[in-house]
Length: 324
Image (cartoon, rainbow, N blue to C red; front, side, top):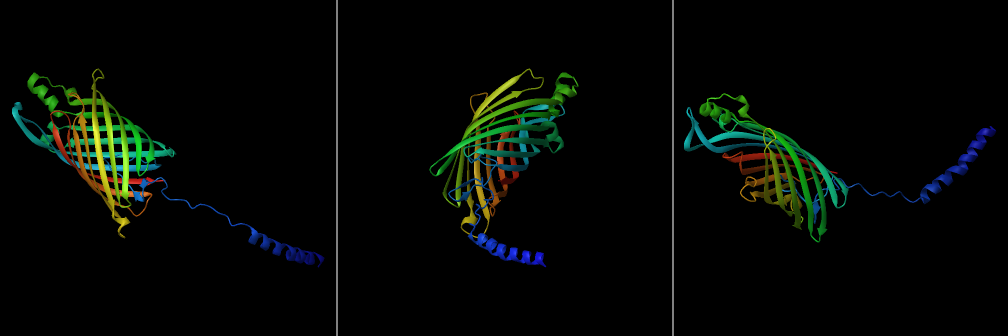
């Protein structure tokens, strides 16, 4: 009985004190976590990713790109006697590429990342398999991005370094040697090259209103090609310019859809520079979530698979990107 009375006395004294202390304690404060904190935002506008430009924003992000395309290559015409002098024809080919990138923001002004790149093209008819052949490439790259905001414009210096071995099957080369030299050499149909690409560039982004954004790049391209056997090295250089404009209807309506249009050109420097490449694209993106971007780009590319195969490609690229 005495124990029960003591317990009651303790509760009577302790409970009011605990309640009073809880009322007097200052409420705990914590800043809410911003989802997609490193998303590429400027003046209320979230910039959409593109295959044509590198944005200047330093982010912690993962990006996956899947490209599929079909095109035509104009090249020499062949018959049972070999190459027909002075005549050309069009060959159909298909292309596919995958890109995975991860980038980490170390400081407000600095980020760096890695990339894995794969590519494949091949002729799709009997004649194009012989003339265009097939080529597969698997490579990797490193990137560093350092930037600063000048008033309403975000800027950065970006440098990409990538290495990619490529393996080609050139059926026409083996057939021509068999016809012209009377030598059957399957090894002449195989071509292995190893490329090292260095691409320093300046990037700038501007958003005059929350719905509209513009991104431009200006860069230098250096490419070193080591051909089959490793004895011959070909160094090429060029200049590259690209620009993309995007508009987010979600900023002015309840529809979370954005559209974009872009252009890129890579032109050779000197007579032994890189091959000229031109890209034009248009895209549509889902814009409801700042930390997540999903879109589809449709485009056209003019390039040279290899001399003298001048080519054009109609392509579709799916892009998925997430920001932390």
